[in-house]
Image (cartoon, rainbow, N blue to C red; front, top):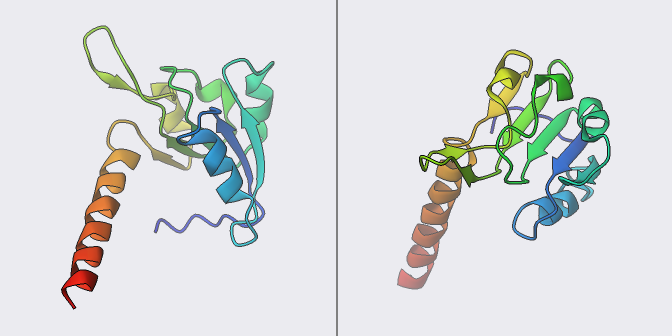
Length: 134
């Protein structure tokens, strides 16, 4: 939807959870996406070495500000799906605020993947209701 070409891209997924990290890594290695995926986590030694090599970095670790601008290459695509809360209850993502100036494209958290998830869920519910009504 945003014109980001996936085939041949180097992707670093930071987070090994069963909701996003691991499944996304598998999806991106399918023939149609054809990405080379590095799956990292909060215990990865020299995480920055892996994220700096990636064309696309997905933050899915649930650690606020884990990935900062020094850890990404210029022009990287960043997708933040990591969710945690501050002491004040504010939702925080895995990327630090300084990444915006260095990245080519950022899907932030909050406001990025979450609204799209809800929109697609609603679309699927409507599609199914229409199928059942026929």
